[in-house]
Length: 332
Image (tube, rainbow, N blue to C red; front, side, top):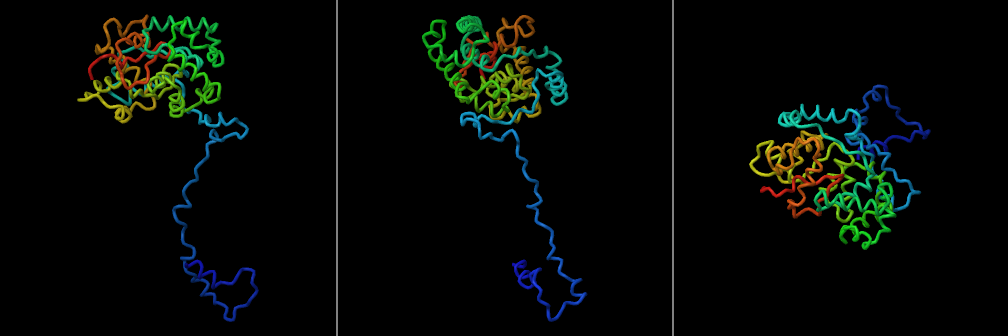
């Protein structure tokens, strides 16, 4: 209450009363320093800067407000020089990973496809061998009148009976329709998917029926070319980390972030080389030769579909011809 007692004993600045005993000059010079004590630490803390990207435009429909998220700040691996930067960084950050980078071919990036088309393709390919999936996808594209016509409104116009005639199951048809409805309602869009940060994108896409965490990770790596995605649920990645670091046990998904911390911010590229490493160690059938120039890693992963066994997976799907190398039937 020191401040209150001081203010009570001092006249108001606008008051004209004259003190009966004016203070001497010496008295003025010995004003206690406590009256000018330094401020506490709390006011000196920097203010939080509000991100402009989170500003909500009141004119937007309510269905779009929930999808406003910050733009990603990381560069796509398809940007000029970014893949080379990733490789140089990983070589210096992890001495055990460096020999793999020197041994195996450079990652290849698939051509960009609109996110809706890529996600539709992933649903159609789920739990199918590559040849069967390709056949159904070709018939689907023909039914739509070309890949450029694969848009939400058209997909919603295809009845389960239409889709059944080209080999699409009723469950997959419901997944396709749920994805299309979320686009139609403004919950998702190609632009919002491209602009979302990884965490927001994961949250939004796993809201779609039939799309699980593994599918989203594959989509982010192989379709969007995101540089820092770690598929913690992929058995191949976990098996490769166990072998690379000489661990006694297969790491749990909850342990993967800590084990692979040194790969940030290029965990997607590191994962590519871990898949190659696992292939070379014989975890995949010899029919899928690692260095084969005419068979991409994505197709090799897809060809193992019939050997998969991953009960906790919502569903397994290839994104642009990808399938889960980690889900083959090895013992853990």
